[in-house]
Image (cartoon, rainbow, N blue to C red; front, side, top):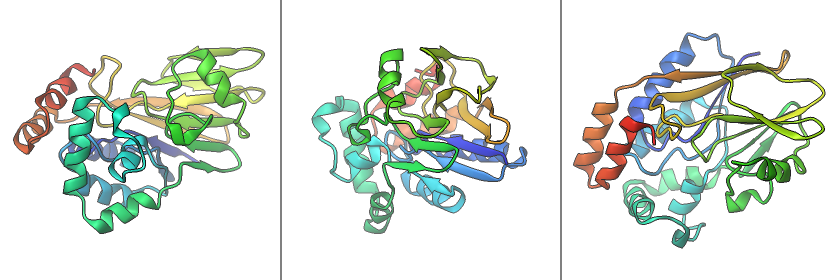
Length: 240
C-alpha cells in the first residue's frame, strides 16, 4: 500500500495539478488531504472540486473553519482576513456545505490525520517544537500522525524522548511513534517554493517527502488580477 498525503493547497490550482501529475506516476493507492484546501489563493472552487474527486479522506483546516465562520478572525493577520472574506464570497453554498462535512480528525488502525495539533484540534495550534509535539503524542493512539498547518516539513519522533528529523526519506521505528508534517502544496514556507507531498507505506514504515516544481508565475498573475493582497503572490517565489 502506498499512500500520498497532501496538505495546505490554499487554492493554488497550478501547484495541485503538478502534485497530482507527480502522484499519478508513483503507483499510489490512496490520496489523503489534511485541509486548508482554500484560503490565500485564487482558485478555491476548482481546487475543492479536484480534492473531492481524488482524495479518499479530507480533514478540515483552520482556513475552512475561518471561511465557515467557525473561527475568530481576530487571530488572523490582515492579509489572511482579507483572503478569508474573498474566499467566502467566491464559494457557493453547495461548496460551503462540503467544507462543513469535513471532520477535524480521522483515525485508522495505522495512522491519524489532523490539520494542526491533536491536543485540542479545534484550536488549530502549531506543532513546531518538541514540547508542542509532546502534547500531541499524549493524545496519539496510532503509530503515526500526519499533520500540516505550519507549511514546514518536519518529523517528530517519540521514543524515550521527543526528537525530530528533516530527512526526506526515513523508515519509522516500529517501537516508536511519529508525527509527520507533510509541508504545503500551495504555499511552502521553508525557503523552498516547490510543492511538498509525502508518500507513506504502512507495511514498511517508509516515509518519503518529495518536492514538486510548478508554474508559480501563472498563479502569481492570477492572484494579482483577483483583488487578493499582492503579498500572497510575491511570497510564493521565495517559499516563505
